[in-house]
Image 1 (cartoon, rainbow, N blue to C red):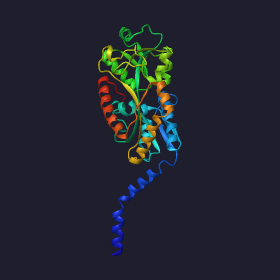
Image 2 (cartoon, rainbow, N blue to C red):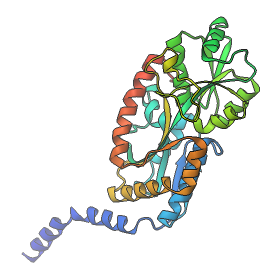
Image 3 (cartoon, rainbow, N blue to C red):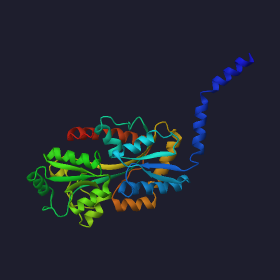
Image 4 (cartoon, one colour):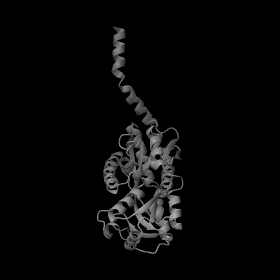
Length: 326
């Protein structure tokens, strides 16, 4: 009888053990260095933002947060790495519009599911995009640029930071809507593309405010239009694509943190809290003032709802554009 009672007692308490361990882990979290994986090359705008966030979060979490760049394959390498990481909160991912919302429609055999393989942590910021052209081209307006491309079918090019990027799909959608014949030139990141755009080796690009505004202000490129719904206070004279004949055309880049699926909710909540506090820090506020990005603090549930809407939105855009990577 004693043995049976002991066994029954152990069985009764067995299901509580994983919960207790999870609670203990959360209470002790974090107690060592965290790894923030970034699927972009070091030095580009997204990487700079991620590093600023890592520095601020390290102060809040009282543990080092080191940035691990794993660029390539439109973010797939970084996302696969984090998908396979232990769901303990010590490895998390800097995701973007392209990697979390566009890739699911662009790749037929994407090796990760943004909704199933990751736990949402926090939305970070959103950023407008600009349609720009090389400085030496013989036009100064959107209408003139469209006429120029139509007069030179198949002879003009546009660059992007990689196949499947927000910039790539946005331009493919614009091409389809306007009936333009242009060649895509993908780069391994934005810096190389911008160098060639300024030098005139590629003709056009869609690019985020954080990456392109300094070049617009320096007149190194020509700004033709913005891709958001209404004109921006920073450039009130610059028209939107929507008002230039494509009503409803809108495209923004954004960034978010996600963790491996199965990361305990209390750990996710701690990361979310640290991310939101980092967004409100002076370093990040100063960075937003320079890059014209808009902070979007919120909860993990906010990110989950946002992701679902963005995946549906960009799925329609990929289908309309006809773009496909594999």
